Length: 73
Image 1 (tube, rainbow, N blue to C red):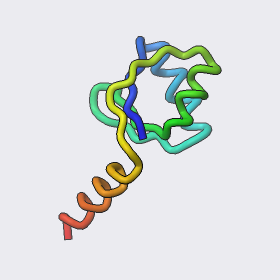
Image 2 (image 1 turned 45 degrees about the horizontal axis):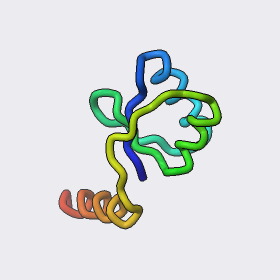
Image 3 (image 1 turned 90 degrees about the vertical axis):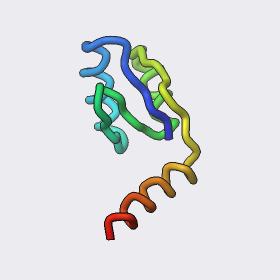
């Protein structure tokens, strides 16, 4: 999983729409999105500019989700 932020509002609108058609997109405050790594290829193919905020391994993302749900029980 990788967190990205688009370069501008127009890229944000188009990028989010295109990604949401193809894959799961997790939205965070301040227009930051978490997508799978292959989402970057989609954005590159469409020439939509973005900035990588944070890279995470799948194991880290999985445990973060699992642990946050378990802590609410």
